[in-house]
Amino acid sequence: KKLSIAVLCNGTAPDSTALANSIADEILGPFPEPPAAASAENLPIQQPERYVGLWKNERNKTATRFTLNNGELRAGATPVRAMPDGSMMIGSNKIVFINDSAGKPVSFDAITNGDSIRFTAEAEWQPSAADLAGFAGDWYSDDAEATVRFEAEGSNAFLSIKNSPRIALRPLYKDCFAGSGQIVWFDRDPSGKVVRMHIGEGRMRDMPFVRATRKDP
Image (cartoon, rainbow, N blue to C red; front, side, top):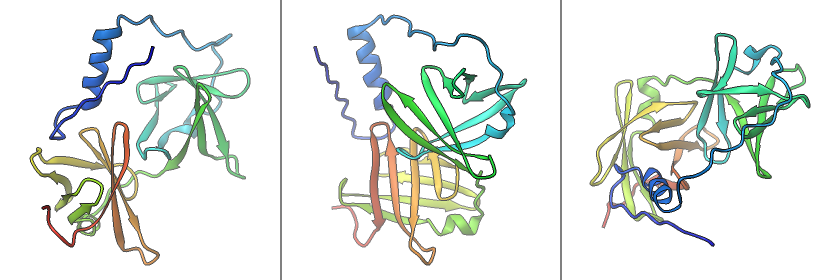
């Protein structure tokens, strides 16, 4: 049998993904524990510090941070395990790193149930007040028929959406921010001018916005 769950909200404060998941849990649960990733032995990861840093999901622009905790490599809070074939596991996800000509990891593919998502290495970004000012202003979406406002207050950034609480944004990597479950990123033209904004949240991966030339109806 197939089941679809739709959650409709007229504001962004409710977590629609969490609500949908809780409804599914109530209807279909309890669920069995997922099987542990297969691993014949606890293999060491060679030079784990090579993988520490920020990795951008090229599908939805979110970022995963790899850290070392007492010598253990982690993706977020999840331990990374080495596998005999040279790949690694993050929970039930298989990851295969790709190195550049100097042997430095520059990307990896995360593979789950035949679906592969590319992640690329990104540098940490701390924009200046002048950087943030370049994004400030009203942005309009034809898809949503609505305008949102990017606000820059010194070194702080916010996203204002009508009838919703203002969202504080934190910088992830260059031209990309996150806050309250949303991801916000910008495109530039060849001259470096900011020309387009995108917002993603949950299953809405990419809603484009352009500089506003008109107000909401």
